[in-house]
Length: 437
Image 1: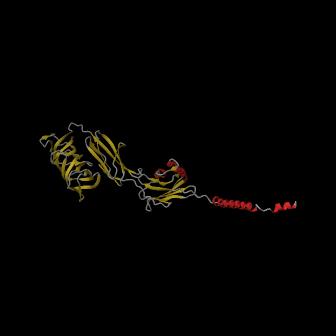
Image 2: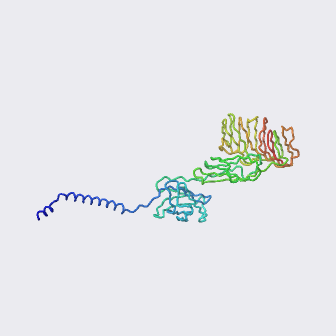
Image 3: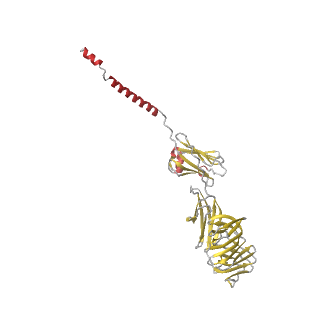
């Protein structure tokens, strides 16, 4: 009996296998425990939003623009904004930002607009300082910070190491031509033009309705209205990257009807008044296509060659109280040897120069088009007004009448001479519509 029990107690054949398994299990549990302690005892990292924000301040509208230009969607409910406007702190909470934004998701390409005059009655001037800090609400992590307006910088710097994006600016329109308000008649073609400070997307609107596009730095639109009335013509220039950045110009354009009995049209006309001069309206133009070489023009003392098949347009830069034009030729081709006016000179639809033409030679001008109008006020002195080569007096008894000429164009096969100043008017060899009051 004792011998059998001792045999059982002394039998160790499977001890090594059991102990080995226990040890392996212990090692596995210990390793898992170490990993678990390492992972779960570590504090959860603060979530960092990776996004780029571009910002700028518009002094014309007292508006701060913040645009999402790259990265992930930002939850507006998790951020707040602190602004520094000339040393005055202005805070925007998450709920206020949501109200401004309209929702909580700030996606790529979307812009938040903060109007300081509406929110706090703070106006923004060109020389003011505007700074910004954008902070997450859960950890006070600075998401973005920088200067929107002022001497330090003109961009919002990025905290994630990316290169700051240059601030986009709105186009600035200038050189409005003709000046508003402007009046023409129902048969007169008018060119409305301006100059944009940058290559912009330019849209013309007539009474608020889309009329035409004229992209680039020299927007212009030519229109002939067949209906009398008063119109509002609007030019809107948009930044090519952010079309919310805009500038605009407006013209009040009155079109009158040529319905009086004295109105009409004539060919090969002649107007002479030795005691008084008139003026050519602002914005009127001639345009043509060159049909030969050797042409040139001198403006502001600088001479520029004009090649064959160039499109040329001269737009009157302001009301012209004096000037001279000499154009000869026949058919559709003309030769221009004088055009002494202050003009905007367009070459192939691009504004080249503005100033007085002191010398010009156009060897051949094809497809000639003119909107030149001339106004001669009433004066009790002899007026000679005729047509058909001076052989037929068009109207008698007009010495004290005012005379409007529209679309003054060289008459076919005639020498066109246009010369006037404050005391003298002589126009001959032309076709035109006219109105006499």
